[in-house]
Image (cartoon, rainbow, N blue to C red):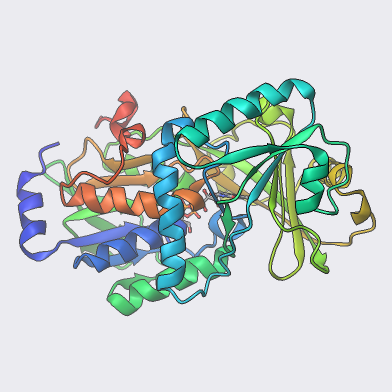
Length: 393
Ligand SMILES: Cc1cc2nc3c(=O)[nH]c(=O)nc-3n(C[C@H](O)[C@H](O)[C@H](O)COP(=O)(O)OP(=O)(O)OC[C@H]3O[C@@H](n4cnc5c(N)ncnc54)[C@H](O)[C@@H]3O)c2cc1C
């Protein structure tokens, strides 16, 4: 991409930038850009956090997550705790730690490999026998083989986080327009120079798309094909109960991957127990993200069975609500973050179900790319240019 004139302009006076999408990724980017002196307009079709962000379990951590992104995750974890301090503890940020349980003896090798890898990367985790797990989680009395434990995992309450970050960004000077869908990108001479909404065209030096699974549709209006598909994600919440679960509980990575029964269980500060179990992964068809269905009965049954297998004393727990949202998934399950082959168009989408943990790192990569600076970690795994299809048509 030839962005030289644009970069000079940014260095001289700060740029006029449009961020599309008011999920955790969009608001975090908007805050970082305004902190650096740019003029920022954030456009959200609905309300803040209305899509997958508000439906999240919002665990932030490095454990058993992605080897190729470990330095990014370490940076992002630290950035979240600094953000919490900077925003005065308004997100219910809690350093809960994470436990990954093993169901089968053959998964010990997988767990040990992760522990060796993470310890070498400076984010220690350890293997615990069932009796040691119960010292941390007295109610986790199910017949697990063992578990791993990482102390650095944290959680935030998603709606509080997205609002706190957006509020700080507005205080610093961003303009935010909610209920304002972007209809298409505005182009001049092949470069993106703004967006079109129902009220007309708004010009900008560059546009950053943080529109989750809707990103490909908007990018296509500037001739850019983006390989993102929606994937259904479901969750259950109990009524609030006395403190029962301290950590984020998840399954050890196993040879069956998602199909082997990925689980995440945690207790919110409100006392609600939040849990989900994915027994059959798989993408949804494009367009699924536009209609939010009820959760599948089979998902409800599987999730309850998994919860009670781990925590038998929670039998009788009353369920309060359930929800479905759509994550944005790329072919290699990693984000698309940075400049594209279309001048003036940047991507920050493709969360793969892990966008909360990565939010601050994504904001850093976008802001550095706009200013032509290298980020403090290698972000090449996120380059939108890695897929031929993201080249301009
Ligand atoms: C049950 C569940 C548990 C999860 N647990 C975790 C976890 O523990 N840790 C973790 O890191 N992640 C987790 N995730 C995933 C995480 O929530 C997402 O990765 C993250 O919220 C993605 O944020 P986003 O801003 O990219 O996308 P979104 O929240 O989808 O935001 C995109 C926004 O763009 C807006 N938009 C779309 N089209 C337009 C348009 N034309 N004009 C204007 N605006 C538009 C949408 O309305 C939406 O608000 C979980 C998700 C679920 C569902």
